[in-house]
Image (cartoon, rainbow, N blue to C red):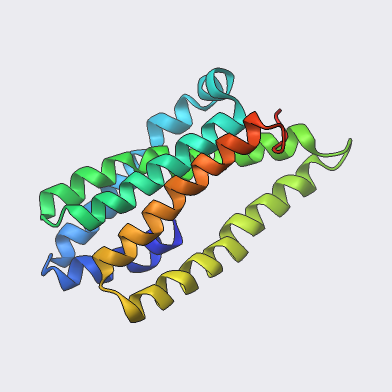
Length: 169
């Protein structure tokens, strides 16, 4: 997510997309979160935290690959519609997982650690990695690389779950 949050507007500017369309892209992605948050409890019941995490990672990966492939304004705006299945899903899954796996009385601390890891360390690492890749590759290739790594990572997570290596809740 940090590569999107840190570099999407830089990428859009390099394509000659106006700042008005950049603002519209942000509006679309923000509004796409509302229905997902509204149906959060149903999503958790249907997919469980791990299933939602895998879904979010796959959608983020596909979204990044989409940025690499599609370069028209309207295509970028369409890709923004799937944002609702990225950050909100990760947040819902992570908070739920932290709550269920925390020792008694430490659920809030576990949720806080999750949030600081996602929004602190994770954002910093993602931003740094994206920046390093941008020094070597054009933005479309940076998005393709990160997207493919995420899709492969989701596959590894699924394999680890099936092998009993990753804990299920």
